[in-house]
Image (cartoon, rainbow, N blue to C red; front, side, top):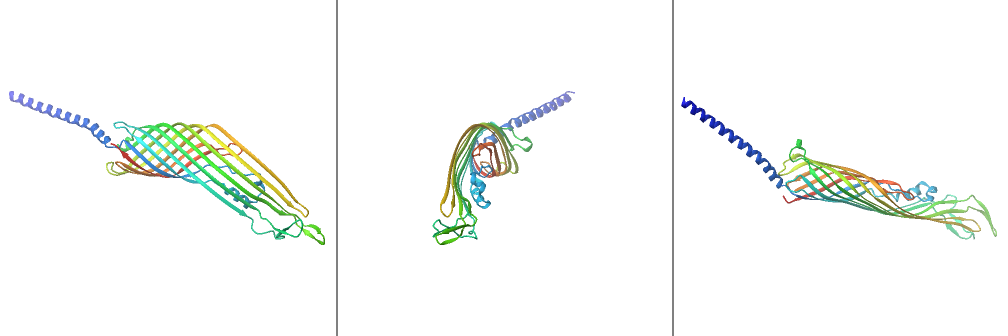
Length: 382
């Protein structure tokens, strides 16, 4: 009987011992897991420096400077004067970003800057070919000299420059994407965005929109008799100087994510990246336009030369407060290393009613920048 009791005591002792060891092992595992994660997080860089560029399509409407004599120019002459004012469609933007992620937290603090600039110069000239079939020269009042007849022409020269700057100050928190694993990032952030848009253009136009000859008119000069066609022409000159600027600042929000698609986080990994951003900007638009137009009408007849001249000038100086909604986003692929990253993708940023593109009156226009981008990032610390 005593042996049975002793056997039961030994078995109970062994069960309790095994139970306690199992519980200690489980507790050690649970306690060790956060330490392992912390160690893993400690290996991650705390500071990231990112540099890159983007080929940006500039989708901004621009008013055409069209003086009154445009209404009487033939299509070919008019085309040269209009096409010379077409703005550039692409620029190369530069960008940089510094991010700081304190150890032991899911917070990310960042400062980012983007800058783009483009300069454009265009000069187009067009003259109607050939001379009138009925007369190759105009007869002067004295009747003894000739002047080569003139052609319709249009000549346009434009020099323009445009630049934009976007600054972002943000604080975000990595909320994770558990379904994709521990290395899937999802950072929701909020902060302040500042945007500046500036442009300048100088347009010079020369035109001879009207050249013609009257019906045959009889004349008598001493012993000479005959008919002559009186020549007439209109010559114009116009110039425009404009400067435009917008400065705005306001709150912004963003969501940036990254999901691994191949590789291992400790060596090399390929990830799909995306991002969305929105901002409400408040600022001021300023526009100054100064344009001058001159011209004269010249009409030859047998006895005299009749000339009519005119000149006009207008200056507009506008300034107003504006609200600029802004939305954007990107998608791309990145090649990640423990302390470096290379990214390629496509991004667009759209600023509504961001500039005043009008000449004689305000005309609100959007500023849109979109195109492929590439960045390289270096991680420090950790």
